Amino acid sequence: MSATADPRHVAIIMDGNGRWAKARGLPRVMGHREGVKALKRTVEAAPRFGIECLTVFGFSTENWSRPAAEVSELMGLVRNYLSSDLDRMEREGVRLRVLGRREGLPEDVKAIITRAEARTAHNRQFLLQVAFNYGGRADIVAAARRYAEKLASGDVTAQLDEAEFAQGLSSAGAPDVDLIIRTSGEQRLSNFLLWEAAYAEFVFQDTLWPDYGEAALGEAVDTFRRRERRFGGVEARDVMAAG
Image (cartoon, rainbow, N blue to C red; front, side, top):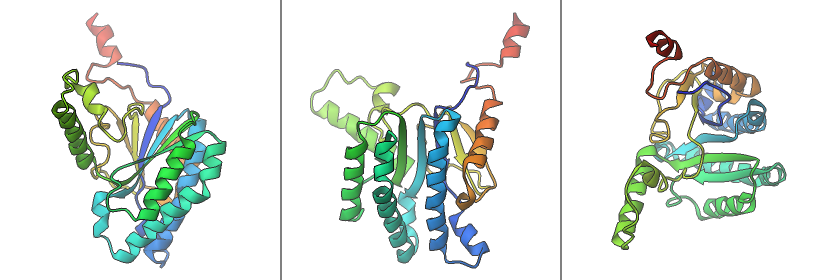
């Protein structure tokens, strides 16, 4: 049990781009484009709230079932975002890491991701993780396979426990997730950070993602600060009463 301070690691399910566009009579792709602007605002604001790591859900393994034109637009957006913001991220000490499968992505997108990760690998001010072509279940299966490969290679020192298993996840090395935010009013995880969410606090906000920014993030952090995180224990006042 610990007193709740600022969240070190915040994860966001960026939801509502399509509804934002529909409400304005615009094509869905316009919602995605505005969503990229919201992401930039949020990344810039996050350190002001004591956040050291931000993980955002950009594209799931299930999103391939969307119309081809929309998938193509989403691939174009990740190209543009990583290319246009790379200099700023490098200058401001942001380390970029992309979680998820590389298989199936266009070759130029894979190359852009590799280049962006390499150029920012030395940065230590802030960690930005973008879950792209990512699924929580698939990531857990991949971690299990990595452990099985260690055993097959004769690495008998690899005793399976939670810490060892977590090293096989694509998020290995990141701080534990303190707060998960989902925008647009929906209240579900959608296969996002299933292992990492074990003791995270959840905040669901009605704001559609393209309208998101510093004010909405601040509201979510304030909600987090008002909670007492027990990690399976009991509330402090109950301990005092028992004494």
